[in-house]
Each structure stands twice: as C-alpha cells, then as structure tokens.
Length: 297
Length: 251
Image 1: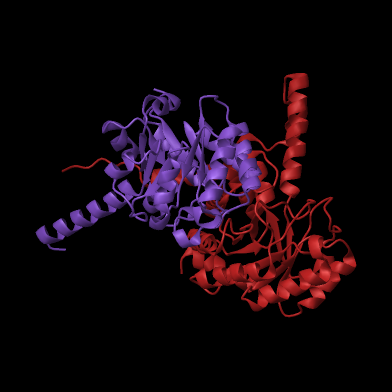
Image 2: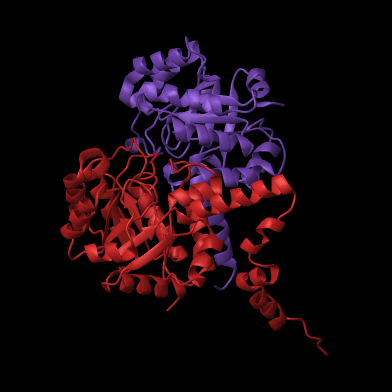
C-alpha cells in the first residue's frame, strides 16, 4: 500500500470512528510539519491560510487551482498524516472538478470539499456571499464522486447557504448533496449554538464538520463541546495565520526599534533545535548513505 | 520591436498560437513578429486536453515565465474570460503582465471559457466592459496592449457584434478588437463587416474550417490570430515519429 492509499484509509477510518477528528489548517509545509510533530493526526489545507501565506491576499478567490494545488503538494510531501483539501468552488464547471479530483487524488490527498458559492468566492465568514443553485451544486458533487478513482477518497459538501437563504435551506441543501454522493457534510458559518446543534442533529449518520474561527460568525467552542453536540470533525482554519502574523509583527517591530533580537530571543527555538526539528540529521544521514566510495577496477 | 509597433507596421498582422518556449522560439525564428500564447494550445500541450478552461491562470503564468526566459519577443497572452469576474480579471492580468505578457486578450465568455463551439456561453456586455476596464487598470506598462475578443456572434448576432465592436472602439476600452467562434454560416456576414469596422479574427485551425490563411488575408481583417496550428502539428509529428520508430525497432 503506497502513502496515498495509507493516508486515505487512515482518514476514512478517523472520520467514521465516532471520535473527533481534530484538524488545524496548515498555511505551508513548515506549519504542517509542526502540527504533525505536536500530535495532530490530520491536517487541513485551506484557502484563507494559503491566500495569506502564498499571496499576502485575502480569501476572495484570488488563489486559483494552480496555486492551491502547488501548496497542497508541498504540504502533503512534508508530512506522514492525512491532508484534507479545501477545493473552493472547484474553480469552474464539472470538467474542472473532474481535473482537480484527479490531481488531488494523485498527489496523495485524503479527500476534499467543494462549496456552493459563486466564483470568485469569499471566506465563509465574510459578508456578501452568493451561491449557485442547488441543482448546479448537486451536479458538481456528482462530478467529483464520479471522477474519484478510490472510494476512500472522501468528498465533503460545503454549503454557504446559511448566510443567503437561512439555516433550514443550508440543511436541506446538505442533505441533497449527501444524497448526491458527498461522504461528509459541512454547513458553513452557523451563528448560534442552537444552529450548530440543529446542523449536527440533522445528520446523525453522516460525519459533520464544525469550523472554529476566532472572531468569526460561529461561536468558538472547545473540541469537547463540538463533539458532544454530535460533530465528528473540527477544523481550526486561521489560528496559525493569526499567531504567525501576531508574533512576526511583534518581533519585527522590536527589531526596527532596538536593532537587535535580544529581547525576543527567549521566544525562539535555537539554531540547533530548529535544525534537529527540520530534519537536518536525517538529510545528512541520507547523503552519507550514498557517499562516494573509491572503486578499484 | 514593441507589440504596438508590430500592429502599426502592417495592414494585416498575423500571429500564431504557441504553448511553450520551444513553440514560441519556432515562431520567432520563422519570421513572425509576435506569438499568441493561448489557452487551447497550452492545454493541449500541458494537460493533453482540448478544453482551454481546464488551465488555471497561475499555471498559465508559470509556463509564460519559462517562455520569457528566452528574450523579449512579444508574446500576447490569452487571459480567456478573466478566470472569474472583474476582480479576478484584475489580478490575472496583473500576474500575466508581470510574467512577461506584451499583450492580453480577454474574451466575453462565461468563466470557465470553452473552446468547443457548443459549450460557449456569453456574459452580459456590461460585465465584459467592467472586465476590460479592470484589465486595463491592472497594467503597469502603458505599452502593454489590451485585446477584446468577442466570441458570441451565435448568441447576439451580427448586429449585436457590430454594436459591441463600435462601443469598445468608441470608448477606447481596448487597443484592438478580435472576433472569435465564428461558424462557417456566419463567416460571410463577419467578413462583410470589415468594410466599415476594423477588427481581427481568431481562427482555431482544428475547429474552424471555413477558409485558408491565404483567403483570410484578403478578406479585410486587420489581424489574424491562429490557434491550434502548432499543438496539432506537434501531435501529428510525434505520432509520425513513433510510427517510424516502430517500423525500425523491435519494441
């Protein structure tokens, strides 16, 4: 069994185990590696963080499929835990979805979600969202399901209908997306705990995801609370972007002011610690393994 | 020679579609003054498909940067329908110009744009105008040329096409107007329009079978943009080479 198959199998088992799948969104390969080392069992790659990390731009449909898939490939190759993909709207029509499913499946992703926003999309917690028709989205889900080569490459439906047509519409859409073949369900940006509970109660037999954004539209709950409500997947999409921005800005202001990093040095890993973490010993050992030896002919 | 000088120099400017550094070099070495790096040829070469809408703009610009490593030969780039709305158009055009495009073509199809005649759907003209304005605003270099490609004669008819050409030119929304996706039964009406309007014709040689290059040059079009020539030729040459190899070698 190759790595891609192992990752798909592991992620499917996690999602249907009944335990909570707790994922952080990794903006890049380094943060993915840190997440893996600190105990996360799966990682999410998503638009908000990738737009910020790769383009220094907001999540407004500026990051396209080429950029997102490049970043996903780097993250997948850096870790040995499943990586789940935010495929936004599919970046076009059913033919584009067919292509992206092939690309993500071939690169070793564990699965992906497709959302029912119009393109260019917005972060689910931003105002001004618009959505495509339910029929058009059902067709996209069917295209994704038909395109996958392995049944354990999981397809999640995401609906942004709550902000446009209300909670019940979002639940109804998600039910139809599940009937069209989506393995997992995600209703984006419910505004209250009651709304979250209604979403979870509506899908007792389907793994449902909750999105925990700091200062977003959904109340911030602990993993334990989310799981008790009935959600089996939790993601924390922006925490690494916000903490990186906060700490980087703080450090750089200090450097500009003082001309030295002395005051911040206790907040850093050391040179040897980082080299060890990033795998320098392994790389050196690999080179040594293939070192040239003299040959007598 | 700048792209503008290329278009000012001749009464009929002919550009050939390219898809990578090799094909662009071929076009340059054979006496053309510009290349048309377009979605159809790029998708055929890079993805082995024939639907131009499958490529994403960052993949297009990455390939364009390889093309531009070889020098300053003017390359016009097919930004299709702007890959979304006017916002995406702005960023896509900006990225393509930064990657070396001397000219940008925007068409009035719904995103994703398509090559097949029966898969083409048009946006509202007001949305196309907004995209042209966004594309122009994204330019950093005033010498970069903007081409407006009208693909919807099947939907808005010859009269709608004429009105669009006139509106774009009167309002200076683009430096040049192109007309694409013309079917054989519409060709005579489009050619007749050249008596009063100045515009170029986009010809996909795999899809459009209505006239030879020699015939088109005499029809009054001010530019001819050919796509499909080199990607089809490459495929044909590869097939021939493989067949020749098979006849000479045990496999």
